[in-house]
Length: 297
Ligand code: HEC
Image (cartoon, rainbow, N blue to C red; front, side, top):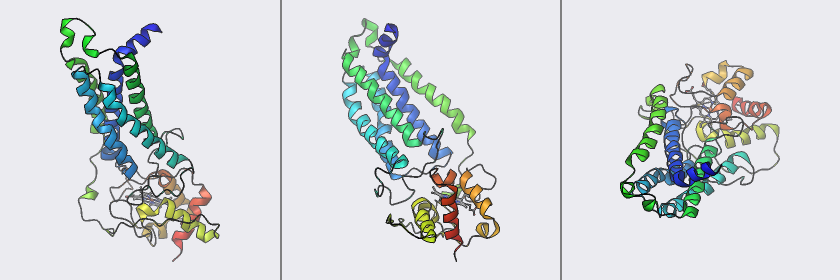
């Protein structure tokens, strides 16, 4: 136990380095390989996380005893941001917050492993590790430059470079295993180019038909368009589409639940549809109400 805490004391900022680089590579893997579109809040978290990968590396190389002071402001903002984002996804605490009225909704859950691990959750864990490790380094307070004799004053290129190379090596496998993202973003899109914000919907009791419309606007309109006609580079046309005309309710429900990854043979747009439209909280009855709304002429 004592040895572990001793090891942690001396290497805490290396763990922070690993966490920051894993978050950097992981987020790029999700967006660039898997095709999951980052929302506005995701971008804010990237703005805070990406510099950390460099700041921590340079601080370690310089053996800068003040490194935690540069890291903590960024990691604490990031911690707040990802906590807010996760609560937005999983609770009604901030219902109605217009955080992402442009582009993909901040409430869209691209992944939902074990029912609770979403992308903001992973970011939260990374920011938490960076923060805790910086606090440990801060409390320890020992100037890193004086932790040994003579040679230790040299920059620790090997462990810093090795840590980064290890993370990059692991992710290189993932990056290379992915298929190149289809050129949907480059080709002229068949979808209308107007990106409209889904209107804020009043949480009033509404009729069954109105409920489908309300749920559609909350969960699907950001990608499929307020009018169901699709949004460029986010989602295709649903209202009046050949697919909806040909498929039974059960088939549409199954497709919606499953979503469509880039490597799915049925994928036509080169864009990803998240499982359940990124809203695992919607029940079958909810999705059928949406479908009923979409089938209305
Ligand atoms: C983050 C964007 C996004 C969200 C949110 C989203 N979709 Fe999709 N959806 C897509 C994309 C992209 C496709 C097209 C995938 C392809 O190329 O086959 C799609 C395809 C579909 C299809 C198959 C249509 C066809 O022609 O093959 C259905 C049905 C569908 N979505 C329903 C929904 C419903 C219902 C919701 C809301 C609960 C929803 N989607 C939310 C992006 C989204």
